[in-house]
Amino acid sequence: MSPSRIPALALAADILAVIVFAAVGRASHAESEALLGLLGTVAPFLVGLLAAWATPYVRSRPAGLRGGAVALAGTVVIGLALRAAFLDRLPLSFAIVTLVTLAVLLLGWRGLSMLVSSRVAHRVR
Image (tube, rainbow, N blue to C red; front, side, top):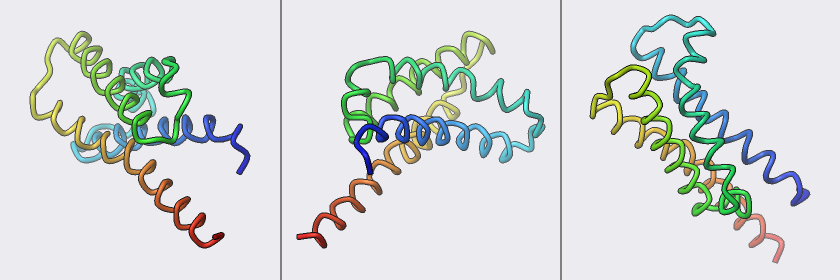
């Protein structure tokens, strides 16, 4: 794969992870499946993700675990802050589930990617 494609694919994977987080959360609470409802749920977290991606740290190593940790921190902190500001509440249980779920999703694909690439590199040698 061309190294120039990695940032775009990493950003797409992160966006997809945040959308999956919001969609699964809405489905688990039997909330409306309307597109506007999903957009309202995902918007604060996408703002946080994009803010994290605006940092040179994430852009320099977008598929690395450290870049993923910065993306996770921005997504969770900014996303929860915006959600709390708009809804005027933030249950602790929601914050914990958000952190754990987004950690699995945003760091999980990076870990799998690193595992696959190391196995491929090992086979090439």
